[in-house]
Image (cartoon, rainbow, N blue to C red; front, side):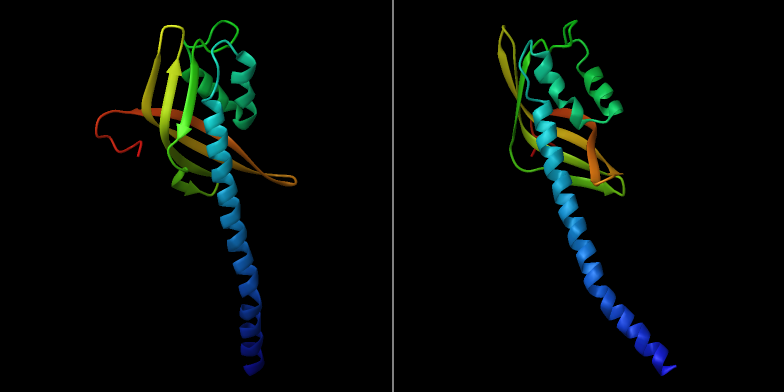
Length: 162
């Protein structure tokens, strides 16, 4: 009986460094995912009028469904060749906040300023980017892609963009 207790105590003590290493790796993975999400989302909202190649460069950072949804939100703002009919620039006010986390993904919000312009004029908005990231295990490491990206414009005293 005493030998079984000793073995159990040793097993628990030996497992602590492994558990601590997994927790540190998870925090590191989460930070890397947030950094990727912020960089990729901002890049997707920074494009020039008439530059289809520049606009489509962001496609690799999206899931197939995520890109379809993003392009659908741009419907009416892309010409027949898929080039945007306006220029867009997003500048983050601060780093992304994690609003929720699940086993397979993260939901982020990035507050900032969204500026859109065309030949007629230019408008800047207080805005935030809502980003859903999807994490997929892949050979050689985890794959992270944008599942949903939506820009939100804030008016008046709204705190969603702070």
